[in-house]
Length: 330
Ligand code: UT7
Image 1 (cartoon, protein in one colour):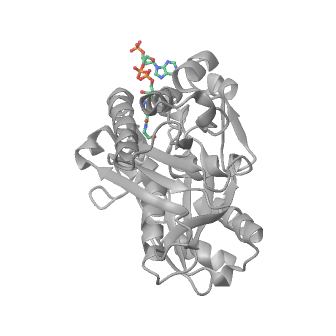
Image 2: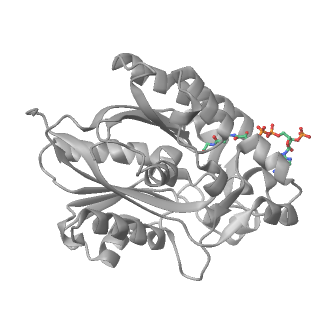
């Protein structure tokens, strides 16, 4: 027993919409091949949320409901909800507010957090601090994006990468030194030039001209982002291991952001980890931005053991990047 309160993940939930967009489908939409996509990114298919009036909150609701069911608690017991997303239902109010209303989390406050592909890492660190402070007992941390709402399906350099999905974890106080133990988060806003959405913000509000110019879609210069991502994700993961004196043998699992299999491989190599310790599901979901990490935790939940050292790492728009060390709590 330790007197220090840590924030432990005590339940996980996830949701991907049923509609699947395969590489073969994309071959019919843009000038690409299934082999090119698979060999350059590792992606075979992605899930797309279809349906009029459906947004990111509609994927978060089933994810959080699954988590509540697993933990055996009601929505009213949630103290706070943090949603990492760059595709909120609306500019305002926050998607966290919408989700709390839809699930009946009447006693919760909440907010959205925008850190693109690092959204879940930033939200998990923030949620853990709320638990560690002793003020809150049940914080739900979500990573969710409906990337299909900001993707140009005539642009072969971006439409092959992204997919939709949502994942959520419940954080609760722990006195056995389990849960989030360290976190290194970084940002460099000069990276915004390589990865952004040009219009729809206060600099360039939506007009007929911005829509015609396709400025409400993801703009990405793939090569520079790739270069920074490989270095950023590998460096920060190595830094986290060094400062906590974790050897490759100590680490049970790497949970990497699923942007490109080659970026994942470079990070694992730098950490000295064999493939069996690396969670990879990019082939079936693509890059779901803030949802990639909790979707991995959900897919691997049954294999995780109490006390496992888990390292989560991500790199994305901003630039934002970082790594978290946690001990699995159940
Ligand atoms: O999660 C947020 C952070 N984002 C990332 O981490 C993404 C990082 N970037 C990447 O993963 C890669 O840069 C991409 C997957 C986006 C692109 O792969 P790449 O190996 O960097 O390709 P490239 O941009 O260097 O393009 C190589 C060639 C080009 O043709 P030329 O100029 O050599 O004739 C492209 O036009 O591949 C062409 N190309 C394609 N060909 C077939 C680009 N997209 C496609 C495509 N199908 N879908």
